[in-house]
Length: 73
Image (cartoon, rainbow, N blue to C red; front, side):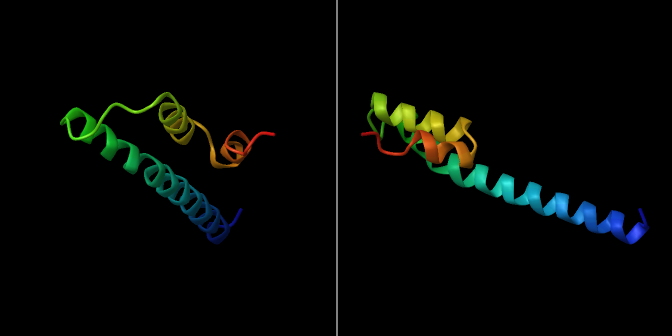
């Protein structure tokens, strides 16, 4: 691999990592805010369904989440 190709490959990896991290933070920030509100007594504890949604949002990749959160018949 030439130096230029190596740099381009590194740039692509950095872009993918950046996108992945941005998606992760976008998913976790609202949940962290809600948890802080619960901790300060400004909000009630989450329901069972809300806990499930939070778990899926935090621990399941985007492509799999669409399948898990799709309405069932």
